[in-house]
Image (cartoon, rainbow, N blue to C red; front, top):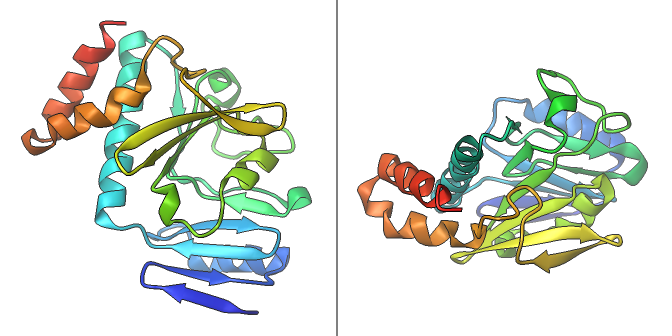
Amino acid sequence: MLTKTRADRVILYDISWQQFENILIDLGETRGTRIAYNNGTLEIMSPLLEHEYYKENISIAILDIAEVLEKDYESLGSTTWRKQAKMTGVEPDNCFYFQNEPKMRGKLNYDLNIDPPPDLVLEIDLSSKSLNRFPIYLSLGVPELWCYDQGKLKIYLLINDQYKESQNSLVFPNIPVQEIPNIIEKYRLQGRRIIRQKIREWARNF
């Protein structure tokens, strides 16, 4: 097992599926780290403050927009999603059900061999993550990714077995979600309550 480390992460190579499962057990559920695993390579990250700030604010914006539009949703945070057959696993910054929310409503356990993957996944600061998440989400069949990086929010849709950047979201097709970071930045020094208020006011215009 080879190891590569940085201040905020560790990367392990030649990790078998059973070792991956054992590491998840050893890390436990009450932890601040997040993992990504793809065909023997495992990345364990400790998110930094800026990362968590934008994760929280964009996640809350998604929920606020859903409330304004009266769309049912389920938010499952950094749940560990994995498929042994694909040798992949990941803990997103956040994930949501919208289209498939009725199928997952109230569930406390899941099986990706039976249940649908999240309809929407949020990832923050992809450029800082050493292990490419796109092949992992492709193997899990996640239809839509929102990726925030360096002040920009990009939408990627799963089309013909690859992710392609899109101007429109499947979840909120009439909302220009790329504007969310601008609203957060404009009102950042006024606090989260004001940010939420402004996001809701903005969403009502569409």
